[in-house]
Image (cartoon, rainbow, N blue to C red):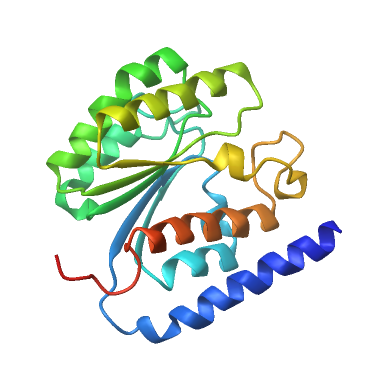
Length: 208
């Protein structure tokens, strides 16, 4: 059954690649994705990356042990999302996707999420898609509450419930229930792409 499900995911991904091939040579919308080692699967899995990159001009800003507003948890520590938002400036583009928090303290995350969103807005970001975490530990439940709370204050932020969407799919994850298998990487890519597509943020820019 798991093998069949993995095959279905590959078929769905192939459909996305085929349908977006015609748009590849046209001007595409710009999407920047910030993530830690979980989201890094979007880069190391070729199919997952293609699902996203064929429909948008993609910037991947991914680093293991990344945190939202503090330096990361390995040596040398990777810069925070806030640091890289400020470094990118207007190069960040109008649409951002965030999957970060597995290395964060919930209280620090709560204090920092507004700073990150305001910094993005100052640099021209118009849409932020923020994914919830797989709530396998209590600290991730708390961070998900922070994410949902922020969406009520910042109207340009859309919450994508990765925690709920991925529930019941153990084959998408490694033994820790967090990091992604190849099937999970494709599932995440398709999930994000569908959200971007639903919001009109894929393919050639639409008239404003």
